[in-house]
Length: 270
Length: 248
Image 1 (cartoon, rainbow over the protein chains, first blue to last red):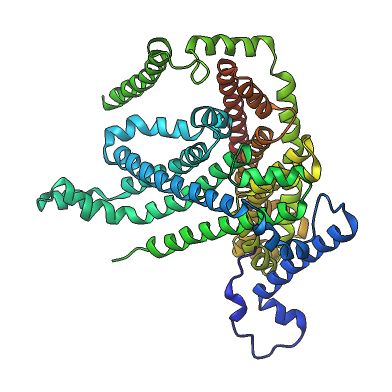
Image 2 (image 1 turned 60 degrees about the vertical axis):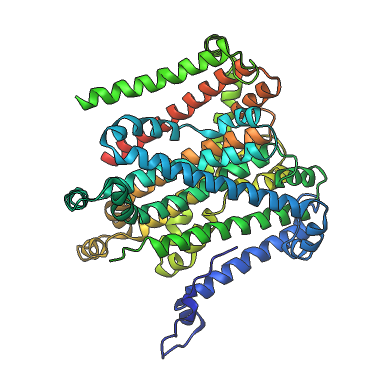
């Protein structure tokens, strides 16, 4: 669950007496210790203090992961949810970048439509979730649509900000050298937009995850939301915690991919 | 001049949306259950406000929000302060907290419902969990990265611990912590409404779902507008409070 940095690999000071002093040079080790301690507390509390119908110790959850995947439908539910996230992310990126470019590239469009974009972004979208289900049904389309509506605004706003930051002198010099509108896009706007575009993609990914998972938990016929409610109703805490942990791992992995991409591309390259 | 034109475009855009809505319901005859008549929505909205039918649900939601926010604020600020007192602890805990913060914590809702039931407790727990992270992280950022020179200067002028906290640490950290508290408040409010929407007996989020399940779409639209107004109002109040506290 924790992202452990490789600080632990740093060589210790030559004079290294005392456990505490050695630990002080290695926050990574201490961090791992904290995670293990928390897992131990959970294990002990779940084994001896709390009702096993409601919570399960981490060791049991880990051992029963095989059972979880053997439950008919769970694997395909995970795939369905991943599919919803992927489709929603692609649509959110296309719409976010498209609308972002359209709004950001013209001063007039920016002045007119940016307030509307910010107004829509300010709406607490969870309140309109039932409308999405009413329009798109209880299957995958409503999850995808809700994911898109959560993911596209951060991308849009980041793209607009990225375009706005391009220095006017680049436009002027490109134009004066006879660049067409297409060449302007290809050689001036896109290269300068890349860092903020990737920042937008990272924020968009968290939005898509939130939107899809909210819609899944609200109502679901074949995704993971269906199984979280089945496991809750059967008081199957072991499988419920297993499934939620799997989803957390997926979410961390997806976030990490876009974060790496951002780190890689957002660096200013000459 | 262009400013005026922009305003006109904005008004035209919104008017066009309203026109499309009217056309869809009155001329095209889109199913009333999918898209209610704007006039119906307006009447329902007036009725929701004037009848005071929202008061019990509003009370439930605000009650859950208050408890959740008090829990996350006291835990977040005190733990954040303790962690910020040592460079080592910051290095240990900050990446850990940031990593957990990156998970969509709404995933824990089924676990909380299983553990704490469908009542207010699970909503309070979720709201407190989600808002804890921005608050603790901003408290660490606020207290943990105070400019060393101020601290050294105050020490050399003979400030004791209390004076150090009151006159150096707190003023330096306050703006960051206040921003974290405002963010924590917003996410706590949204997650309380979200968990009411997903699994509950009462509250604003529950009421919207109730209307949706009864296919009472016109009233649902009205109620949604009302809830959005409440959320925007509370967030605006918090921003104003933050701005005021910052200036003092």
